[in-house]
Image (cartoon, rainbow over all chains, first blue to last red; front, side):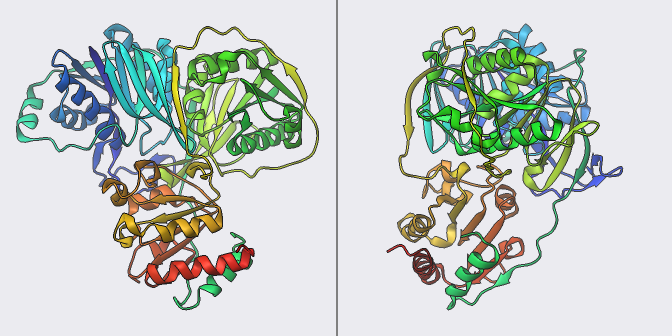
Length: 247
Length: 321
């Protein structure tokens, strides 16, 4: 069993969101970088659990980014995984990133490719589906459970108002969300081991991005809260009905 | 030249998020002086000609049995084939749960740029530019699609369902379809409940409710508002509520018309998942709760006293006994 886990570097969940260069670039000043939580808590940890059950499993991590992505990928290696691959390119758009991952995956012969359900910066939910299409593999999106029995996979995925159980043969691409696994903290042994795990740097394939971000902006601030006394809920109902027209 | 809209169905009925996509796609067609057409895959239990009321002229209906279950790969191939045949240069889908599986596949298959989770109509004068939320709703980006075919997946609740009247021509369509590689072993859909990501009103509870046994007041309020119920991350982590009710940065991001937060302090990660709600009401006994800064209306008070009264007052307003 060979697993590839896609890892993205994202700003910490509490990072201040601001833009520079006439609102065309994210302001990285003072930003702490973390492993995208969905990639870490759900995709990577589930891959590690599968390796714990079957020690013959090999886990590779992949990220598309510059050298500044290395601390984050080392942190991922501290949680688990045998080696990491960094495609040495600045991310341009989802298709560009997915194409780089697909190019590496094509050579690697992976049975299972994991992504998180989305990154917390671009919120595209696009990488997994694109990789699957480029590799002609089935794609199970927003999976909350994954069990393997040989090459047969059983997954539970979210649907509107419920869930659906899917059965599919490997190889597959899975985007993982809450429920798939529980967050782990790397231990000292893992952190030490991660220092010497192989981190291979490969040059990007020639691919054109399909989209570009022309500008960023911040939503307008709220006008301020209208407080209603606790003993006058009727007033809140009136405001919601007549002013906000929300009920 | 045309706009092609994929209509996602559940039990043969178009989902509300797809009616939004239809209305949105029809508006783009109007804006660009082209026609809007729709695709329905699998058995339909409603009159598809009536989808014309949202502004589409034609509905391509593929009835092959293989489409009665969802397989993103097969759906993608079918939509791509129909898009190519109809000469569509804009493809619209909902950024709902199935849309998130199909849209990226379509983009890679057609080498057509995708804007995932659009929240505005495109600017189509020169470049084709669409606004989407980024940084979990804390900011937005204007994304330009640089390919001849453009794909837009529309965030649920970002565009109103708009009826303009009319009837669509329904055309039986066939596409090349292999056997599905994904087998749907079971579908477990809670009947009668409002799906969280489609809900117009969401009532959400946090740690302030002290335990799962107190969720009755949340459910009663949700029921009278025909709302979905949700919760904060600590509540889901403590297994007071199922994880599929967790809204926030690492749970679901939602954008209902009305979000009522009960006993939720409003951590930045929670706000990231709900700050696209049109109206936010916060009920919390702590006047310093950060959520009040992000709210439109608030009550500082004990949820166990305020919420039942609120439920009663709304019941009176709606004339429900």
